[in-house]
Length: 397
Image 1 (cartoon, rainbow, N blue to C red):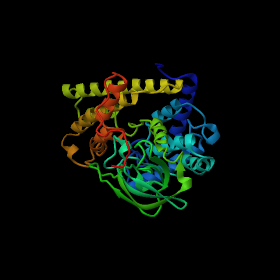
Image 2 (spheres, helix red, strand yellow):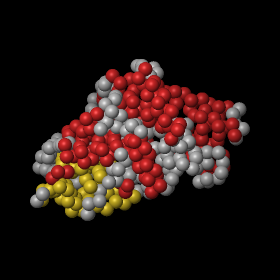
Image 3 (cartoon, helix red, strand yellow):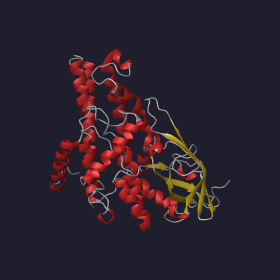
Image 4 (tube, rainbow, N blue to C red):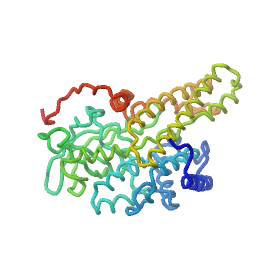
């Protein structure tokens, strides 16, 4: 594992930090638009503007090939930019699916028309994308999906339901998996579509979360027409395309969360720095932050060397979820009775409440804790595979 930056990475970090200090709003100010700080429509507008600013300044598409408008750098540079952005009141989460998942998949499997239509618009902040994979009965076992794609003149008719679709209401397009051949083996009868989210027959219903936000959505598709040129890759070959998408997914959670420094400030302002329980909690938070920092070095080292991450994202996800819960509990404890209020005017009020109410989703969003443990057990510990409920065979009963 490499500690610190290479010469090129160090130069890039200095340049990124200097640019952000000139253009990035400070955290906690009126211009801060990190997740949960503004109403949804304001967050979307600010995110689009910020992505355009990144594009104009040459900070967009760092790891995309130069031939499609990127800069041809390693993913390590993307990670560095995210680390530096985390110090400011900005968020790129709205474009995680577009630039981190849909874009690389279109680069790998798309034709020239699909690339030219979508890739520049993603980098400029003109297209927000969502991921239409999970269904009420197909989450961890994605191959059991039942959304149907039926042939029609000039394209396909889509019917089904998707769930837990982040930013679906703000999305211009979605990457969609649907079953196009119910008589084929269940992994072989799936097609990958690029769906215009403004098409007729799409009903998006927000799922209100306990933190008051509605980032997740249910999406109902009824007789939705998708043209033939919206198929990505081969018909009935969508599973392989989806694996490219999932391999491109990078866990960048954590940029918008309060952390160790905020705990210290809150403890000092509440005159609790000498409380032994509080001190131990802060020490644990510091240790957790250092472990996450070391995990970051491992990720950046692997990315810079072009090595696969293996089960490392699962290890990070498990630890990060635990770290968020413990730091959130401590932050709320430091607020005392004021922690029961949405915004009492206390230092950190509002931010810590949002932190505590949002942290549980990390245990689900990128794969449940149970799924992460299964991945670690099978890929690292070489344990036997989990028994499968459904046997291989056609998707149609």
